[in-house]
Image (cartoon, rainbow, N blue to C red; front, side, top):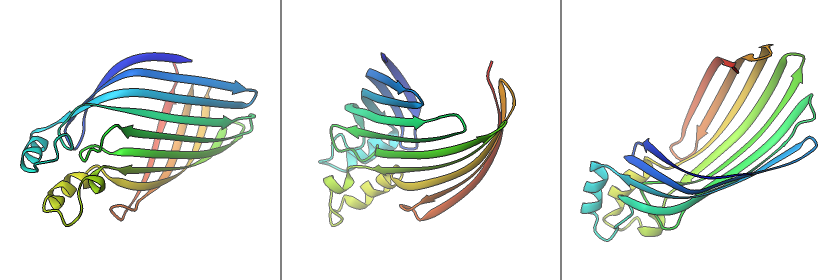
Length: 206
């Protein structure tokens, strides 16, 4: 088990994000070849930029929907892996939630399922992941509202509904080093766009 606190600063497409994690807790529960993990983190975030300030000032009645100050929220998740040696399977799920409806930052539901088969120094693996990012625009505004089109342009920048498939091969050519090859395919239903990628690299443990 692990409990702690922390801070984080990020630059997103929407603006500068500052986060304070008041509680970070991780609990590992293992039994034989089965390993599970529970994660929970409470946080407060602030998000601002010159563009968001302009939008916030123009769209009256939506205070806090764009320029965010100390908004409480949480991250909660779980993971379970079964690994007897020759193969492994695992699933993970996590969600991000805020206490109030926000347009400039998205809530998220993430899922991962993965499986791999080991033969000698090689591991063939496949994974499927999904991410469903939503924000509070549909709860705060209707399409007939004159503020909707401007608010939606901000919402679209942080909204997605994508699924990713990855097929990979790992070669452990040294006890502390591995060569990796991966092919991936991502389908984003929200913007109706498909993306393919190939990546390779060497992982070294010192």
